[in-house]
Amino acid sequence: MGKHQVVDMEHIASLIAAQKTLPGALLPILHAIQESAGYIPAESVPVIAQELNLSRAEVHGVISFYHYFRQHPAGRHVVQICRAEACQARGSAALEAHAKTVLGCDFHGTAKDGEFSLEAVYCLGQCACGPAIMINDELHARVSHGKLDRLLQAKRGVS
Image (cartoon, rainbow, N blue to C red):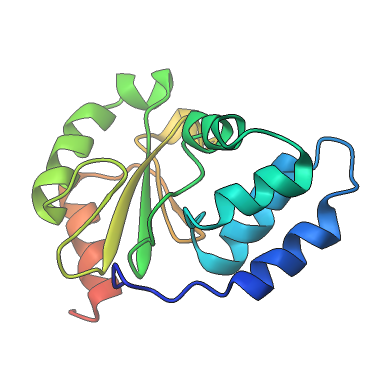
């Protein structure tokens, strides 16, 4: 993804308008924007704040509090590594380190080639067969370094 991605503010305004009367509208609006744009563009924060009668700091505070929300475009594939206790007990810390080395980015970052973004997640419900990861919407359990490498190569189209 390019850093200069064009933001469709008319579409974002329509997403805000569709949800702003809901009780607790901020989270549904942020989810709708991220689902549509892939992240929460900075340009949308003042619009959301004005429409919900909140301060920009309140909107930004919610975006930055929840790891789920991205403030920059994600890579073509999003790799989420479970960091919950059960996965940590089964080696997720070593898997995290391997993923960071292989992808060349830290959590909340994107590889230089734009193919992968790396995210932390705090339970994928696979506690008995960790470490677990998700790549886009695909869940993978008992992920070793080699299995992660194979999964990434498959996403790159390398067999």
